[in-house]
Length: 223
Image 1 (cartoon, one colour):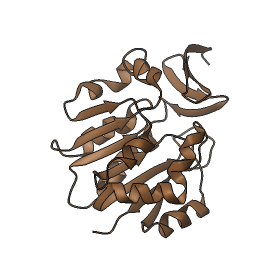
Image 2: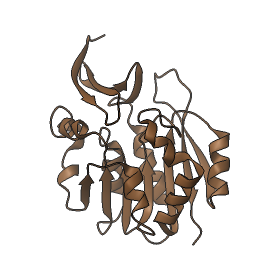
Image 3: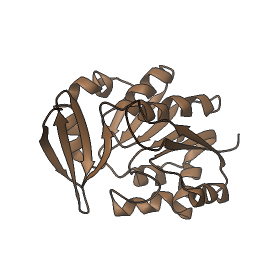
């Protein structure tokens, strides 16, 4: 076992703090005592992009990723989507971008300098609200599930009117994909009420992790 070191902290706009921790070669990002993501367990974050890609319609011109994290979803999206796909990343916390170019640079590789990528230091809700039929895919990993756990204002992403805004921001055949650490049947109902066809995928925790599987919802807009 390696000792745990606090590498840096980041203030969240509106309140709260993230911590970047290191234990030997592995890193994790925590909110309080809750781990949001770790470098040793990237598969569910990658699946958010790769599985959404498989469920999207013929158009894959423009994709929005909510939450930069450790770059696993972005990296998987760059590998999965065609070279013609433009990828917009919305990150609320500026220090997370500093980490991506500093202690976590080995995880990101060349992702942030890829010409297909545009990085916006903004609330992903605002990006969605300002882009009617602007995206073929919206991939959200900004909380531990469909509630404002990290940023209270994120509740508006998951309420009825927030989901209707996401539906409006998708082009026909587009997919809204949402990562979660838990199942939420009521949230599935809200997605369906907003006009989405919903598929729920269970992603097993990586080997050696004693926890329930992760959940990803794929909410599709009709062609």
